Image (cartoon, rainbow, N blue to C red; front, side, top):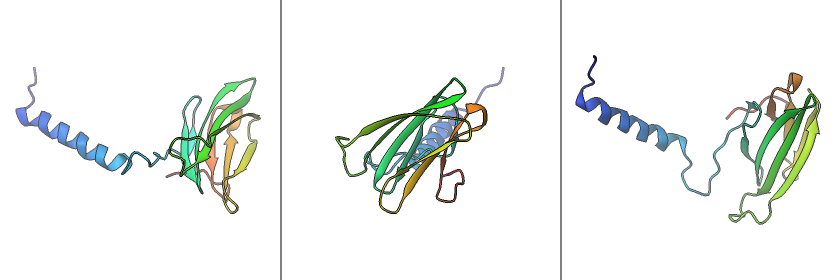
Length: 127
């Protein structure tokens, strides 16, 4: 049987603390960003302009059945939150204006197997 040195556990815990420090927001009011292409039931979490967005989809009837919540980023209690439900065909996209100059776009993937957040040039966002 292989025994780990006593310090191995200490190094593992220290490594986890360092990773957590660099992957979590600086304050509890900052939203974690998860953009790009996601599968069913996986969330897209992003801030676009002055809006926070959480979106996910459930596949069904060869569509991406999207549920999305949008609220003002300065609203800590999310009283301004509004929900949207829509059904996208494969390859179809929807754009939502988050400010006068910024737009957030979601696109249903091929065969309704993924949902992607797109930037202004219709490229998959990756942060």
